[in-house]
Image 1 (cartoon, helix red, strand yellow):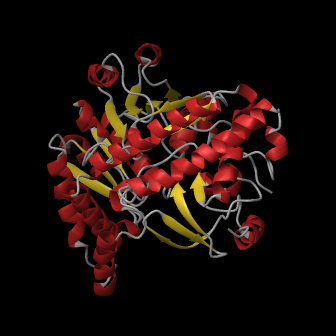
Image 2 (image 1 turned 30 degrees about the vertical axis):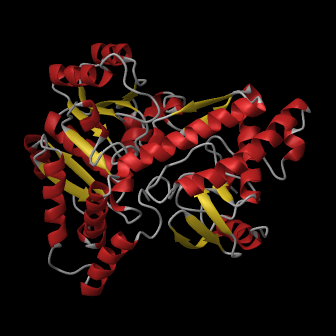
Image 3 (image 1 turned 45 degrees about the horizontal axis):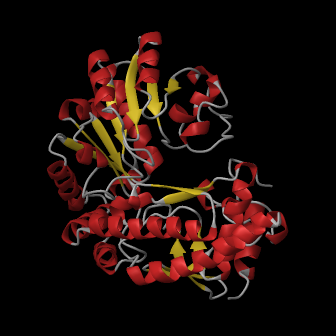
Length: 439
């Protein structure tokens, strides 16, 4: 394995010409392995990634930030995309695939009656909140979970700079968000229905309630049903943000798994296996409120996204991909637990299997240990963090060689802990755990 010199050099150049180095915080080298991460890829197929130096890695981490549920460059999805590229991806008329996709999504979600499309998760959530506010006639949003970078969400940190800390990433600055939006978005914690009840009691003008139905916590004590009941009682539009979890538990949204139907559901990421696509589906009466405001964008009408989504969803159904993902995720989680026990490491493994993850339980040393894990796994040919977005392309053979490497690295980590040499073994800075300005 060569040191990824070209990728490191290009990343250092990128930080001089692109604010933050790239377009996505989650892909910054500093979030993985500062000064050592390969940063850029030349080719990807299945779960294999080739960097600019020709190194081949097995991706045992975020798989395109959760977008490539079938694996990289899936043949069936690529075939559908190449067809519409050759026929023409954009012109003055509309793509028939968007009508087919709308009908497929409504068939999968019988509670919904209409669909609108965008191309990214963040913008699709902005569309959903716009429609919901238009329908309810009220501005204030109560939310739980992570929902993107737009003003409606980030405005929560105008009221308190720690409002969003527990929802994904600490340290997010709301600079540039109009201060007039202060107080317009109010957070509550998952499974804390008492917090939502208190918000509704305090603010009589809640028009929208936004929830991630599932990430790493299962709903307890009918949490989702109780959220829906509150929304119905106060006449608020209930939005389920399915951008991260959808398609991984079943063909459709996780809310189908729990039997709780919102007024609007939002999808992106895995629905199109790495091609830009997002969908906002909802009850017909609510969705028609999109006609009472202005929601329109040229590239929401291109043809690649819908074609990719149709091919992806049909393959998810035909191959029962969620069942495979659950099996592989369990194999990974069980492997971590057994290896940690063998080497005397204190870790916590949390699900669901599709988003399997573990954390070190060593207080102030946790982030350094996470960095050391990534560093040593990279040497062994793996892009790895303590989180894995499991894909259909992950096979048992991959997991066996991966867990063998994990065992070797866990042994190194245990020795480092015993000898108080964690930072001595690190060959670069500790990875960032929150938002930090890159200069």
